[in-house]
Amino acid sequence: MRDLSTAAGPAAGVADGHRVGPQLRGTARALARAHDVLLLDLDGVVYAGPRALPGAADRLARCRQAGARLGYVTNNASRTPQAVAEQLLDLGVEASEEAVVTSAQAAARLLAERLPDGSRVLVVGGEGLVAALIEQGLEPVWSADDDPAAVAQGFHPSVGWAQLAEGAYALATGVVWVASNLDRTVPTERGTAPGNGTLVEALRTATGREPVVAGKPEPALFDEAIRRLGGRLPLVVGDRIDTDIAGARRSGLPSLLVLTGVSTLADVCTAQGEDRPDYVAPDLEGLLLEHPEVRRHGASFGCAGAIATIDGSTPSLVLAGAGAPAVLAGLRALVAACWVHDDPGSLDLGPATQTLHEMMAVAPRRSDARQ
Ligand SMILES: [Mg+2]
Image (cartoon, rainbow, N blue to C red; front, top):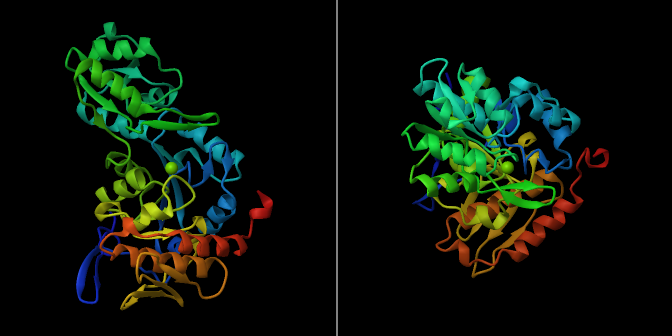
């Protein structure tokens, strides 16, 4: 069983005697040593489309050497865990099928909890969903005339009108409907394309029904990941505030936001409430570093020598030294300063962002040359 006593839920911050809502956590050990299981999102964290992010494979290998077990938790229901693991291996990331947990598996678990063994489930999706249903002892079917006891819907490029129509016919009988996730878009090599949320919307419009949802930010996917991967002190690692970070918070898990994907520095600086991560880092190197406490001195916030000051509408940022630890400290100081500001959305983050980017450009990254 997880021990959440020191790792879950928002840390209520206190600054100059005022409670200011969830604040960044500090840790005197590298996150990969302080947490026994890392629940990593894939796109925007490990890879971007078909390519590994610079340094990702090397950094994940070092996390493993530091003692962390690595799990890969994805909202994408189209592929099987085996196919995802093979892609990771091709990118130089060591991964077994058992280390991959998909929203299709979480959706199948939700159905297995509601239906007798061997029940027929109409699939609006592809092989990822089919494999997950079979794993749970359910029988995938493709026609509403097969008298299904439920509808399972997950993204697959092959989904078209005919499958959606079968879904609508089955849903008209009142059976349960589970959607793997509600991501409106999926990234493809040619751009942004409709995701499962958009296809779910078609059935919602046609039927007036509402699905049960398995994927992030709903808790079922992280529940499934914990069930399969175990761990006493898991850490969620993601690039999206609205799915990875919000989902971690709802599941009572601590989280690290990396700025290599969808969510930007401005997004994290203006995040409120359950959207705030426990940790933030420019990239996966943040798993291999300690995260020093941020301390407030009036309008200034200091972290390991870095100082962020908000005096007026343009925060200033002074870093102490070079390299990844100095950049991380500066980022933490800046985020902490913004989180206690009355209206962080009004701040001009341009100069502070420039300071961070200039320093990241010269920060040594061990394996950039290899990828
Ligand atoms: Mg992502």
